[in-house]
Figure 1 (tube, rainbow, N blue to C red):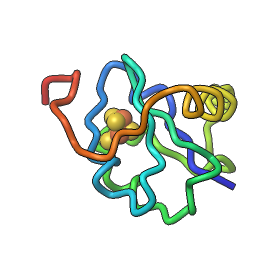
Figure 2: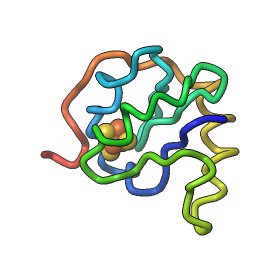
Figure 3: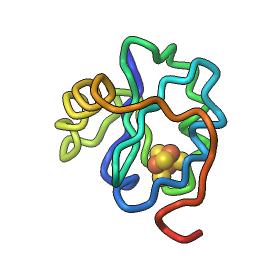
Amino acid sequence: MTHVVAEPCHGCKYTDCVEACPVDCFHEGPTMLYIDAEECIDCQQCVAACPVEAIFHEDDLPAAWRGYVEINARLAAELPSITVRKEPLAGG
Ligand code: F3S
């Protein structure tokens, strides 16, 4: 099981989730972040940390965003890890 970053992160990248994660499972793309399913320990800390509610347990993912399970797994493996909060794209 894992948690998944979904559509609301796109164009936002608040990165509060990164600081909440105890195992550094987030990876950064140009427009959003992705969770490495093999690193995620399902602690749920990031769920509450995200101001736009972009993170879900994979079992709780809204149907329209099911595709993000595969997207997170694939892109987290390709993209660099992010472990420190940075200025959000959303400007907030
Ligand atoms: Fe994205 Fe929310 Fe993290 S907007 S970068 S999932 S805090």
